[in-house]
Image 1: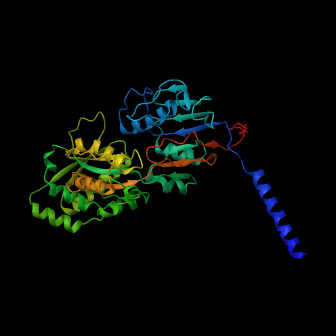
Image 2 (image 1 turned 60 degrees about the vertical axis):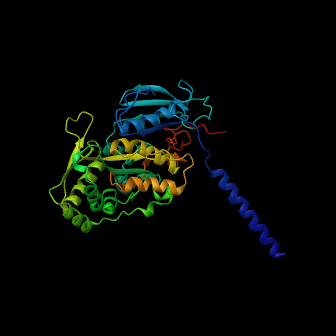
Length: 392
């Protein structure tokens, strides 16, 4: 009898716990304005007008996706017009600010938030400060400042390492024609130091064109520095060798990495000067430059083919086309073919990093090729900032 009473009491307690949890759980709420800050400046929302730089191109693609919906194969939008995407433009100040309002009749379902306010051209310092004082909900955080953001009390979300920073020797430049000089650069670069000290451990060294989590073969490419071997190889070449290394003038990460490469190269006896590059820069073309590449898909073949479309003409590589259903071995062979000539020197993989306010709910860092997940998040904030309408 006592045993049965104990079982009954336990069952009642369990039911009470479940009931309390059910009452206290918040269901996704409709309403509110999601505040977003980005560093890029977008000058046109017309999908037929190309962006002027990598940063603008990435931001424009994200905003265009919110307005016009997902792209179809080939890169175009299935339908360009009001109501074709989850949001429509309600206010637009080119290069500074855009407000988007949710489309109630979006084919994929209405977004939870009523609107999105996107401020452009925000410096890293301003974005970090606004995250710390809860003046914004979502902001891009440079990977190298992710730890600093966490130390400042910022909630941080990072994707898989899906952005590659590589050094590319430019086609036709006489100073980089000797493959042994290119090999010296590859061997002397301390990739681990770049990850540990510049990226603050938010990344992994890269030896190939795909990360380990994608194709599973990245471990086959060496990433350790060999300064002794580099110095010995350079002594065999003889003569004085110098290279000019270009980097994006507006990118602090690229500048730091370029300066680190110059230090490593000088230790091996190779003179490397760094050269900031910008659209209006009248300086001569460098011998090599740093390039950022973002994976357009988790599929290794898709991403590698996308990378090759950029690297082949830039580095003067032989054109290559992967089979439609390339195997892991074929993808690895293509990577190896690029790596062995040292015209492309992969350096590090690092993630997309976002700072989030505490009121952003159901956030998931996007996978390669996925857009900002603004249609799925909802806001659980103060009544003054968030409509109290609750999803039925």
